[in-house]
Amino acid sequence: MQILGRAIRALAAFNTGVAAVARIMSLSLMGLMLAIMVAAVFFRYVLNDSLVWSEDVLLMMAIWMTFAVAPIAYRVGSNVSLDTLSSRLDGRGAHMLGLMTHFLVILLLVFLVIQTAGFIERGWKIRANTVPVQMAWIYMIMPASFIAMLLVGAERALRDLAGVIDPGDELAIPPAPSADMRVVED
Image (cartoon, rainbow, N blue to C red; front, side):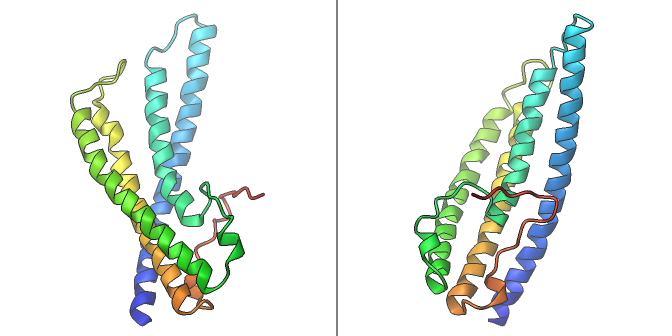
């Protein structure tokens, strides 16, 4: 159990650091997107001259922001879920279901990492419409996000494994959302 505990703590520390960087990056991108949108509206309706590059840049930023926060959402369990079965289970049963779910998610993420390699390769041949950027640079966030999600999945699977071994173990509890993250629950 000590090895499992060390592995969970190491993954948790790494994933916490990645989440902090992703949070700063996504908040910065959101601020930049707001500034570009305001500038685009000002140029279009006040100066009667549009910023032709704004739509492409906003789309690129939205892609990066979305993929940056995906591992955070997975880690704190704020992504979409159907909890009809899991809400009826407790103790070892809930952790066993979680372990199986995270294993399937990890398999899917491995597949997605492999698939995005080809996506990036094709992106080197494509340029954005209005800015001189090869789309591969924009697509690079996808495998990075999927790899971060793989590490989150490993942490959550190990936590569930600890819960299967001892449902009362504090390591079996997934991290809670931080104070600056709002999770909407029904």
